[in-house]
Length: 247
Image 1: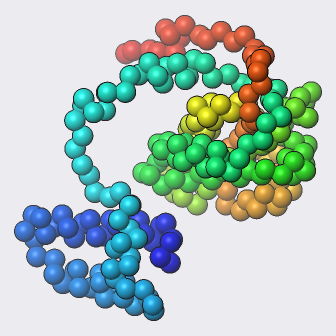
Image 2: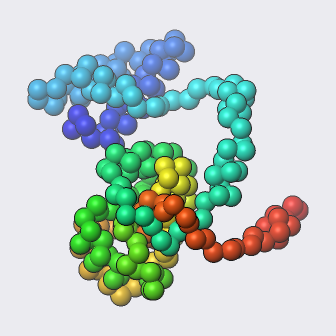
Image 3: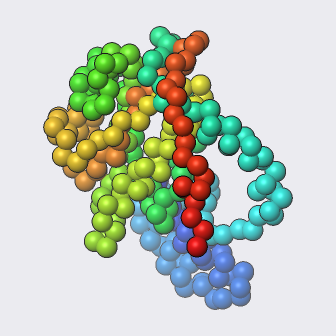
């Protein structure tokens, strides 16, 4: 329980709320005592252990100067977005676990509904497993053997209420964009493959990857290290006027 993210997030939020109340001269001695009592119920773990473990969890609110937010030029993101391409041929260089951890760490800052973070990613560094996954992926015909790695991006439907139908796909789509941009920043090429609803082989793919029934597959990313020369397909973008309508 001491390493459980949802539990520690709750500890951090409650602890932050108590601190804020005390700063505002609100008497919350009783609430803090109850909070401490509840945490001390876990055998072998002290209240202070939970508070220390939750120190790195960000809660509450803070004010940041505009200058700080703008000190990184937007041109860096513009260059990243314009130079990212869908890659369909890769080098033989292996990708390490450490590189994947950095990619997902950066991509985890993607916006999500009320910070619910319903997205998970499933991938394997095993060549045989990736060859098996390639057989299920729609849209990779003709170059399926040129993709060394696949990443399955899912979103958990249980994080959403009845009035939020299909919002899990919105969150998954945002994550797909962040992941591929994060990959590119690490020198990893990628190509997103759509996953149609109830696509043949979905049950087998979920079983292979350990994906729960509550998760919907939002897309699959084929990825690998960039070759020395990269072939990219020419793709014009619509004029801004076709994208943007000011009313």
